[in-house]
Image 1 (cartoon, helix red, strand yellow):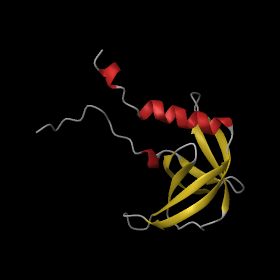
Image 2 (cartoon, helix red, strand yellow):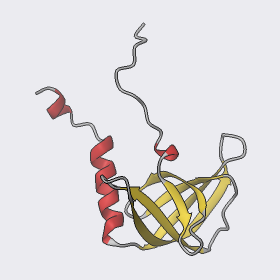
Image 3 (cartoon, rainbow, N blue to C red):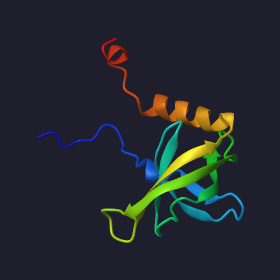
Length: 119
């Protein structure tokens, strides 16, 4: 059985923290993301049918952060399989160009192109 790991695993939800844009307080972590929405993993359930002003702080090459601010409405929220965690689905209403750039960067980073692997 293969036991040596060659590629280190990284959990996306441990890296991209989501903040309340108005208070700059953390509210959870990004579970997944698309152009239309995102899933937030938090320690508290989120209020459904409420618009939230959110902020992602994306690390830059020089060690600083770029803020990506957007508005999203919570569509659902339920307890996660992990104790004391909740998953909440959001529909993104207003997002800047940087939000789309983040999605494209994550897609490229986590995608696997079988044609490049055989070269």
